[in-house]
Image (cartoon, rainbow, N blue to C red; front, side, top):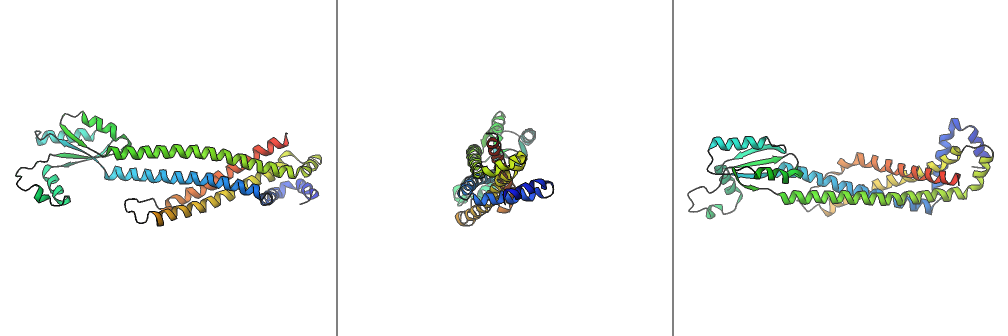
Length: 306
């Protein structure tokens, strides 16, 4: 569009200015070619790293929940206690803050379960006439992250002679989640800053290429924001393109990992893709647009007042 046309549009901007700004921004993003492509590539990398780490973190959370539901702390009770005192221990355990439920397992029940789960169990206990097992309680926790603290409280019970729990598994998973979260935040901040810098330079180059038109528009009375908006929309379109492309790549990568890489590993059950789709699509697009718009506003403001 010629400078005269832009001036006419300025006069009628209240009616169709937004459409003009959008068209100019879209056209600018296309015209900038290599610079726009560099901005989009960096922002895609930023979004993919953020999305991948979030997906890993959510899958670890899911695994922790499964462990909370399936894994338990087993405490073995002193065999000298009678039934009443044993029940009293169970009631005390139920009152602990991190305990979700408690299940009593008699030594007779434990022996039957052992026979059912251990191959050649009859040969092992052949000749043993007295049940060597103890009464126990299976304790299911509210928060697996608090297993260590709960275990320490249980150790203070004089009636409990032994405690068995997969504390190492829960601690390793929680450490992994914390590391993943920390790395995700650091990588996202670094790439977001790089994205802002590159997009800002892209807009600056576009403004420099049109500096004569901008000066003419200023002289005929165009407001700063009338000049800025096309470049702001250019940044928005760069962010939007990046978000959409990153979303499609993230879907492809996750589907490939689930269907091809981990399909034969039964121990690894990842969350379905449908679980991530709504917030992944919305998050990628919004973050892309916000980064693109912020970069444009900072660049345009600095250039106009330079």
